[in-house]
Length: 606
Ligand SMILES: [Zn+2]
Image (tube, rainbow, N blue to C red; front, side):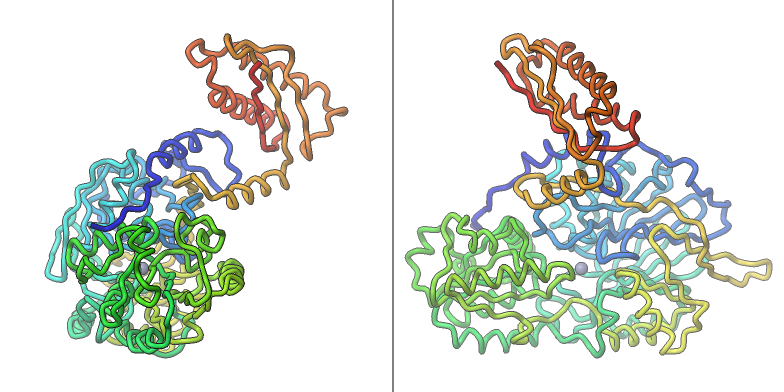
């Protein structure tokens, strides 16, 4: 069996609950479940317009979620989180804002998931419960990964998942007929979605590349793509992640040779950092291990989970004996027979690689002769932490090989020539670049122009901006990028809120930098929970206490009252009292000053 990395599930739900109850969050939004934004609801004139609204993924890579709405029916494509993959440190990720869907639960006819990456499935456990748990449709591997993720959240309802493949046809509601088109990516079982609507056919590519020789997956079906193109496409929505990269994306299968040559030269242990979700890469590494007589030790919870799921359903093929099961076994195997495969190639503070270099890993220490291979591209923003990580590895005597030095990396996304090919094959009437930062969408739009699409039929939208298709009296259809916007601002989740101190520290610093802090020290009787004396208050960067005596005094009295009014049953629970002080005082100070200082309650029991 596969060794399990200790799950953080129990802590996660607890932390999530307490965090979401806080009235003030200093991020760009809060995680609210019951705050319908009534004014922003745009009624769909009956049978009138087809609306396409991308809730996330137009101003960033991640948080992908798209709505199609017609005649009081809605279908949803993807429900991702931002950013980046599951080996993110597990704190404060962002999910799409679903305020628009509140009150429209009955309209939602289905949710389609294109593939199993976190930026497409990560929001599911948070969102499904608040939109009425509509039926879901996705590939087999995706279903396995979604179920696994849902298990980690006890607030997530039991999901109604149906598995689909390239032969599936769905009728969702009266207006949407859905088919699936196989595409390639860095994980198997990826589908583009074909949606036949009363206005015409829409294609949403999901993440894709065109790979003629993928690993453990079928090649993208170019014939079918061309055939569908021949039938007439109203709108193509296509992945823009690599739209600024010229040329063609290389095949997953071509990375093997380079890696293999690399392996031949290494005498010591091979330690590889990659994304757990890049299963095609993981398969390659299993094959290479078998070929070179090495065994694999999996590290990191997401790595163990993903390998287990994909192996169970046959997307990863290997002899289970190749896996090293325990630290003891690892210690007995010669170095030149070992591959340690883990997460953390982005320099994530809590992932396997970082724990190793910090000496926090329970058994793995770097030593002379080790070679650490980074096998994933650098996500923008992570450059510094990756450089630091590499420095630390080299200082500890190991060698570092990054894909930039050797071609051990194939990206998962179509590059410029692939993107142009897709547009040429599908010949859509309208085009909408999705899945990327604004500049990537613009670059993709330019490619569409290069292959002859008129500028006015290319929509570079922002998150929440409504695209509309209508028929005029003579029956001709026309599309428009409207000025209407539905809520799409950040919804923050304190996901698996354990361990990642650095993010919390950063967040606190932001709060303190803006509005300062106030420390409240309350002394209570440990037996009765009653207050002893008056609470002490210290302000830093919030208000000058000498000039705000009245405010401070009123705050002091509130705190005293909170402590006094305690529930007998929770007399000794200082967490409870602290939260109550934090919430109440935070609210009070905001109404008085319109500022949100960090409130730091300290409860001393005597
Ligand atoms: Zn993806």
